[in-house]
Image (cartoon, rainbow, N blue to C red; front, side, top):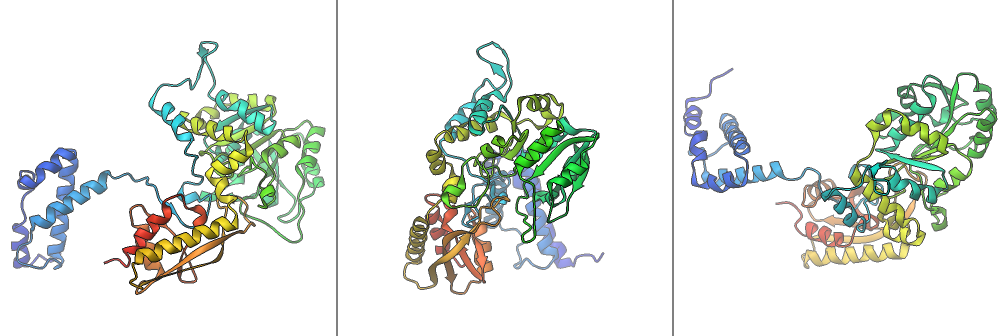
Amino acid sequence: MAKPSSDRQRRLARLPAVDELLRAAEMAPLLAAYPRRLVLERVRRQLALLREAILGGRLAGEEPFDPAAFFPALAADLEACLAPRLRRVVNATGVVIHTNLGRSPLPAAALKQAGEIACRYSNLEYDLDAGCRGLRYDHVEELLCRLTGAEAAMVVNNNAGAVLLVLSALAAGREVIVSRGELIEIGGAFRIPEVITQGGARLREVGTTNRTHLRDYAAAIGEETGVLLKVHTSNYRVSGFTAAVDSRELVQLAAAHDLPVVEDLGSGSMLDLAAYGIGDEPTVAAVVESGMGVVTFSGDKLVGGPQAGIVVGRRDYLERIKRHPLNRALRIDKLTLAFLEEVLKLYLYPERAAAEIPTLAMLTLPAAALRRRAQRLKRLLLRADDGRGRLEAAVRKGVSRAGGGALPLVNLDTWLVVVRIEGCRAAELERTLRAGRPPIIARIEEEQLVFDPRTLFPGDDRLIARACAGLPPR
């Protein structure tokens, strides 16, 4: 490795020592505001950056150390170190259940109750009537049973966990019969066959990718059969020459052989969205009414609640599932329960649920309201440009998505705001907005930056206009 030149050596020697910097007057407020260990770490980092710049010939000027630049850079570095990594973002993509952006936002009304539970003690596992230990499921079980018609219910941390727990409890060491067309891979590379084998069961696939008949299930049933499993195919669909077995038919076949039949509904709609002209997803209540022994679904997709795996069904099956040792590893915490309870209460009043649960409110927004939102955003953008003529905004028709593997074939008609800024490419604009405070997540279509008002909260449009007013970046 070549030695640095004498000039660079001289400049390196002129950098102050760490102890000298810690005694500087400019350091006092930083030491008062941040842990000394963190300050020491970041001072060393800033000095290392200066050394790299000197050795790389990137530092101009005779004096290598400039206090007027060093201390503000150090302060910004320290602030960034302790800034929250999990941050609020503006979702302008039009994808309602956006997996990367936290899936379903929760109703604001649920925050007060969750705050009470978070900051105080609670009866999480304490039966106040009996004065003894209770079960955490009890807080939502009655609600879930009332809403779905099931005999019993419980909740774990997510739906993949729910399926794993159910199969571990009901089919370990035995075969799980499932249609080949339902052996899907969901987000994060989790595959149904792997979930089945992880649960200690053996996969027995029947039918073909596009067509499975009741006779295929019937022919596969034997002494080793533990469960008949039906899986919602999430964001995967086979169209054309297809055939699948209806839930009721599968229930009748299972009953004839005294076998549990389980349906993984995936998103699991609690509200009949077909009444709003959105898709043809069966409701959880309809699937339970078909006689399905156990039904699992997510809490943070079409339900519009917190991340959770909800299990409803026959009481005898649920008792076995609750007693399984894996249940403890998958149980949910008190905050999830608090939020879930408040969201489920809204479903007792379907019209309120559609209006107050953000996911449902966004999905069911009428076209006229979306157009008004888009026109308002356009006006705010042009006003923020302040007559400079550098920003162009137009409103046009477009499509939103439910997201989260829900309603994959459903196009949600929307109105989009298309933005162009002189001298800036769409990718540059998107990147700059994403780096803002708060980050604004838009989408690019045909080399144009696009905002979809469907997923904006009140005030988000002003944040977008303010951010665009500062573009292009200096």
